Length: 291
Image (cartoon, rainbow, N blue to C red; front, top):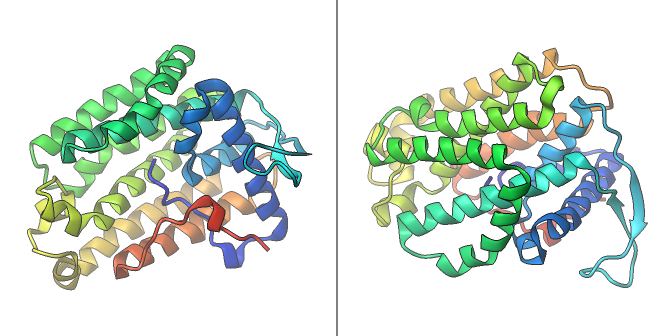
């Protein structure tokens, strides 16, 4: 994914902050074990959130222990122990990162060096989870076709990535998957694609890259587009949030879900507001302070 799915820190409970950091560090270690140390560079908040959500829905307890790591060799930190879900998410993280960088190479003709760091990890992840790799490949090809055709429908343009995340959720959840979990993950994937496109509006126009918002509204800048079509854009995002909220009410969680509720119901709308006003910056992991 792209680093937009983050918690709303001021409204996060301390216990959830500790769990979030433990999951983040645990996922980092798991990526290194499954895909190699270089692949850890692609670690994202998005996949930490995915790990938390999957553990809860699958009734898999997160075991946390204090350990040291290469980045923090002197002070022990809470780190989630490795398990099947974490290893699967680690591989998906690497494969999605590789495809995202491949898309950058295709669109902007740069990033080959960055992608090379993930090539070996991608092969290892693909070998461990060929079905997951096939899901991503199939939907990324559909997305590329829509972009090449300059699709002017926001719903159609976001559909392949939404379907990719929905299919990956089914793959990860197995028997725990339901129509409601699929609907939730589809909406989240759709939001990720649209928020990334909105954030990149001006850059895409400057570099002559495809952008669904530009194809839909044909305005020269994001500011002009939002000034003239802000209500329609807001409606699209509010529809996604409503779908997320409705799905959450119908999903059975085995543990406390304050953390994932914070991210979905508060973090995603907050990120949308930041991108809309042009003040969004993807926060680096080391910059997040959970008090």
